[in-house]
Every structure is written in structure tokens, then in C-alpha cells.
Image (cartoon, rainbow, N blue to C red; front, side, top):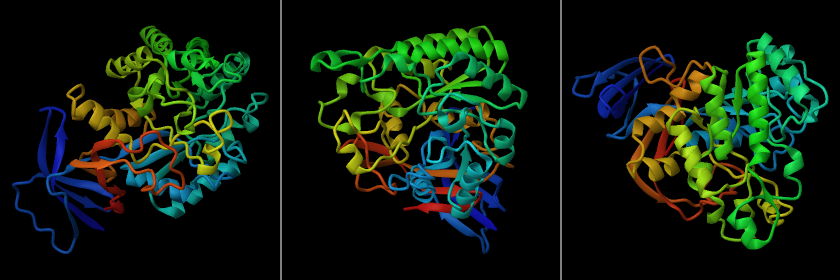
Length: 428
């Protein structure tokens, strides 16, 4: 099967500028990148005229929640992958805190098979570290790897027992697999939903201290150094965590980390009040000092990549109020426009830097054969209209859920076409 993408603007990392290209795809692989001035005959092949829009390697999101199996009223693999495709993502990695938990080979295979049959974006499942994510007994890592798991995590809860985490790391290291950690000390967070900062003080509510995250980051960094495992820190949100990760990297620990758009853009001081649970997420929005720290951590390489932590919940669940509503916001469809508008349009980041953190770097960290726009690479491609400016409308989503604090925001840089293995899986 042949496909041409004509007149696209491709970022050249060497020249640090956009260059106009034609791209020929054959059997799901990028076969040629030609200067747009070249005279090409597409013959009977299908062709997409990019019309000067950005053509990038497909975005990669290594932290998402598809809620399937068990919570299909929030999201399922089909609706989640459609929403991901609309956001320009071609590869996503889903977390195991479903019901049942993804802690057995047959549940891993369920996710793999359903995603394959959906035929939208590539779905890579994580499996749980402990059975039912209860922190009491390790899962069968070898069998889960054989079934298709790409790493082990109890995301949604932190592994509270240090010996359990060390044992998990040693086992994962023996299988050449990563451990991915939700860092949270439960004894410091009970009964709170907002960060310990100006917002919690103003409203007289208990806050979640930064140490709740950083204590686990520091503990696990030492355990990773001892075991030699690839240890990946989920959704970094605090200045202390950034400092600890930077130190661990400086002594050669195999540690990587991720950050979400909302922790790069919002602080607790942006929360409008106690009435809207769409501002309730885990980790919570931190202080402006923490926001600056995670931005700088991403910029200096301490934090390796950007993820969404796409966490859909039903409107009814979020309407329960901040004390009873679940943590989390959706993220697929607004991720790139948010970051492009906030950081690239303002001149803080180059377009190439943003693309690298959403394509090349996650692929490098997790050893994926994608994230590259070059001859011989899989034809996983996203086309973005950098000039398109729109208002975020929570109702205009392909997800089952619309829980976002960004409703009404004016953003630029919207994905318009997503291609996976040479097949158009979403297009305006």
C-alpha cells in the first residue's frame, strides 16, 4: 500500500528550521523524504496534501488510562484510542489500575488483542508490580512480559514497602524490564486532595505536602542504584523530586522521568475554588516554585519526556464534589496545543524541543521502534496546523469523558491528521 504526504513542513534538527518535504510511504514504512521542489508522480497512490502544515513523527504518550477492562463507563480501548489519535498520538502505554487489575497474562492479552482489533493507535500495556496493586505479593513478571507487558507499575498507588519495591526492581532487572513508579507515601496524603500551598491555606483545608512524592523518589532512586534496574518516575510535580532525580542521574543511576502538561502550566494558585473537581488530580497542582522547577528539569534533561496521564472520569463522578470525586483529568486532545501555545509561541522553547519530548525521547527511553521521521522508520506520522486557533470545548471530544480544567482556553497548534503504519486513523 502506497501513500504520499505532499507539501509538508518537517523540522530539521540540524538546521533548526522547518523544511518543505514530500514523504512517500510504502507498506507502512517511510520510503522517501524529498524536497518539495522535486517533481513527483504519485501515480495511483493515495495522497495527502499537507498544505504547508507541520508533519512530525507521531506523538508518543507513555502514561495513559484507558479504563478497560472494568471502568468502561469512563473510557474503553476504542474510545480512548480514538481520542489519542485526535490528539496526534500514534503510540500510547496504558496503566494497569483497571478492574480486574492488569496483573495476569490473560488480562494483558485482552488489552493487546482489543487494541489490535480496534486498529487505531498502538497500545502498549503495563502490568502491575503487585497482585491487585495491593503491595503484598509480586506478580509473575516473566509471564506478564511474555504476554506483552512492556514494564511494571502499580500506578495509582505507591508501593509502600521498600523491600517489596527492591525485590520488584531486582526481578525486573533480571528480565531487562523497567519499573515505573507512582511516587506517593500514603501516610502523608490521607484526607487531602490539594497541594500544601497557598490554595490549601487560603481555604483552610488539609494539603498534600511535596514530601509525599519526593520521599518515594529518593527511596526508589537508591534502590534503583542498588539493583541496576531502569527506574522511571511517573508525573513528576515537585521541586524536591526534580532535585533528587538530577542527583541520581549525576551518579549514574539508570533513572528517567516524565511530566504532564498540567504540571508545566498550572499551579495551585490557578484553582478557582472548591466547587470544580476538574481541578482535582494526582499529583495535585503544586506551587509556582514547583512549576518552575519541573519546567527547568525538562529543559536541562533531568525530566526526559512529556506524558498526558489521560485520566477520564464520568461527569457524574466529577459532580460529587472535590472531597468525593476521583482524581484525574483527560489529556489526549489538548496536550500539543497547550504546550505549543504556552512554550513555543512565547519563544521559550523551539518547536524541535517540544517535538523531541513527545516523540524521540519517549521512544529512546522505552526502546521503541518509532518516534522518528526518517527513511526506514514506521510511518507513524502526525500532521499539525500550527496556525489553527481554537477554543477548548470539553463537549467536543472523542473520549467518553470531558473532565478538564482547560475548557474555554484559546490555543494554537491543533493536530489535523494522524497516520499509524501508513494508515490514516484520524483526519479532520
